[in-house]
Amino acid sequence: MRKYVIMGVQGSGKGTQSQLLAADLDIVHISVGDIFRWNVQNHTKTGAFVRRTMAAGELVGDDLVESVVRDRLTSHDWNYGFIIDGFPRNRRQAEFFLESYDIDGVIELELPDSEVRRRVLNRRLCADCDIDYNLIANSPKVPGRCDSCGGELVTREDDTEEALAVRLRDYHTETHPALELFRRKEYVVSVDARPAPEVVQAEIRKRLGLPPAKAAPQHEAARAPAQATASKEPASA
Image 1: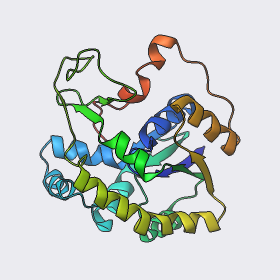
Image 2: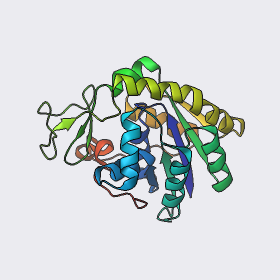
Image 3: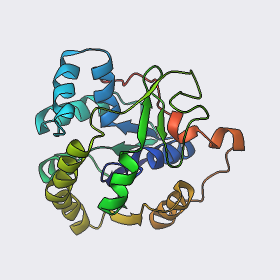
């Protein structure tokens, strides 16, 4: 059983790298952001609160995040392990996680703020099927339209200059102390997130002592990271 945490600023590729590892190692990718987005899209009470918070560029409170993570991990559908993305975001959440779960490693994806801005402000989301696109490296065949369903591509509410500035500030002031806590326990491997996804994935595996990725058929590899969790309902939602 393998249990990993992946951390990095918004736009560093946490979702893509998590999905690549999860698919190859038969572990479960748990994305706190996906769980919250599902609640927003399905108009739950939690979703209404999260929507207001995300629109303001703020982070959801510790109590709610910890509750969501705890509920998700009690589902016990992760027989071979998990990789969790979007948690912990601060020292308190890191302490909660260390007290509750044994982990095998923490992956830190390093990305300069200038590159974060370039990536995040070029992200788009299909309004109909939730597939993610990036206009820099993963642009649709028809501008503004999803390759899969033809739906309109929209900007996420939290992908704005103002919201991004808040998230960068919070990452540097809140998440770095959590990383330092993990680092002192020698859990952390730091990887440069600027190269192509497959290069980053290879370096992650090397640093964690994992075997090279299994070769995926070319037609599957092209969109796999973007579509892997596109329309799944989170178990805890």
